[in-house]
Length: 216
Ligand code: ADP
Ligand code: 5GP
Image (cartoon, rainbow, N blue to C red; front, top):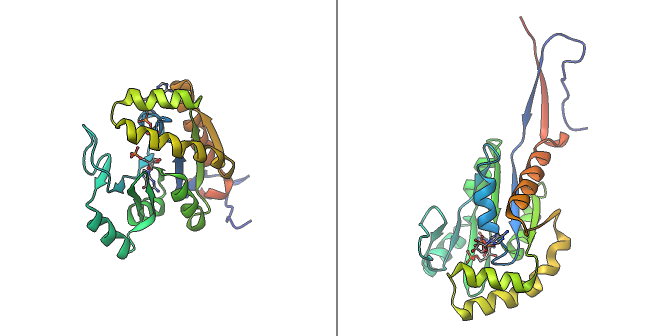
């Protein structure tokens, strides 16, 4: 065991546990409910930190730069790639999306749990560099329901919706490469499941260092 165990055992003292930070990757077809789910889960798990991605997609009404995404011009996005600022990046439905490397790595080094929403290409890249990550796939109840949700969201043209549905059909098969699946039928239940997954991963022995603080 790599962990240096210093549990108090029979000695007097208090056991202190420090846990290493890690990245939770949430994927799933566009419209499955990733952002809605994240908004529910972030307040439920103290300290859970959202990684804001960069994109060349134009903002939807109400989306804010630096909050929902860093909205970049294609030239700026290319500069970020050239400077090695992305942990991963991919092209999705005609736009580029990427995860800023420094923010994620610094937050993990500080012991935080970071969550990011990336497509399946991005998740594959992250798995190569952060094997300690936790990979979660959000499934819609059906393709018809996915269509309804994309239409109901009211943010995408009918062409964009058709393109996203087409991509969704092939994305669903990728679930087998993930650690966990969540069916987003009932939102409250889905958010409880995601919070439970994160809490359980925080309790993994391999992420912990145990120390014994002697009591005076
Ligand atoms: P994604 O981030 O995966 O693209 P969104 O979070 O934008 O998806 O959700 C797409 C639409 O589906 C939104 O209008 C949202 O309100 C709705 N939605 C999300 N989860 C559910 C759910 N469990 N039941 C019904 N509608 C949902
Ligand atoms: P949307 O345009 O609906 O916000 O996102 C479209 C797709 O891009 C979603 O599948 C979402 O998970 C993905 N995405 C968002 N941020 C990133 C990112 O940083 N990297 C990658 N690879 N995909 C992302």
